[in-house]
Image (cartoon, rainbow, N blue to C red; front, side, top):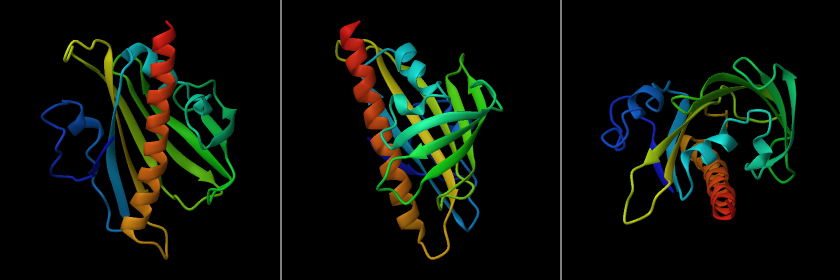
Length: 186
């Protein structure tokens, strides 16, 4: 797992992935923080994307999601979901809107629009990329997820990013584990 701070000017990944500049470089306001996380998955892109694109079923790989119900839409752009968070986290629910879902470019973007948590104005983009054969390994996929979020009053930029990076990092590792397990049985 790799972490990169979000920056409007530079990205250590832009040479490797042409979509980075388009989807993962964000202009941050003084009261915001963000980051870019990268996870390699030993599974085919189509399999990995099939988990990510399920806006109505994030609990398929997100460990901190207890349940999800659709409030509006059918899982396409404009849909709104209500996510119930597992106990032990400083949140109970999150209301989220699907802003972009591109099955050809493998891009998903959603925004948090409400809920019982401190992550105001959270916005996340995930892109999925096929990796060419490397060291005899086929069907490798790279998942890149970036986010921007307001820094809550009484919290620091570092603490806010650490919290978000930890949750996203766990989710990406879980995505890799679930995808790799399914790929091994196919």
